Length: 123
Image (cartoon, rainbow, N blue to C red; front, side, top):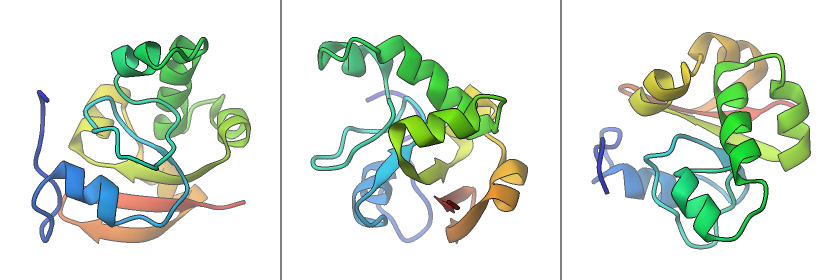
């Protein structure tokens, strides 16, 4: 895997962050995240989403960006995929312009270490 493999303090790497720090639920995160077994996500690396045979892989990629940055289509995408958690780290902020400001207002912070935050989506 290329890119940032580091995770928040207390985790060995990004993989541990994604696989052990969240309850079961649909997640939204960047493309540099591994595909943890048994966890559902809006997208991830578009090549992996495409390889899985998902016909809407391009829409999922675009919707991930809308959700992470709190764009105009965020609410509709959250509902469409049933997103429960937003994973926000340096890659989400740089790749999708992920907005902690937006998610501080629209989510509940459940994890916060260093540059990494996880927000539970408010329904």
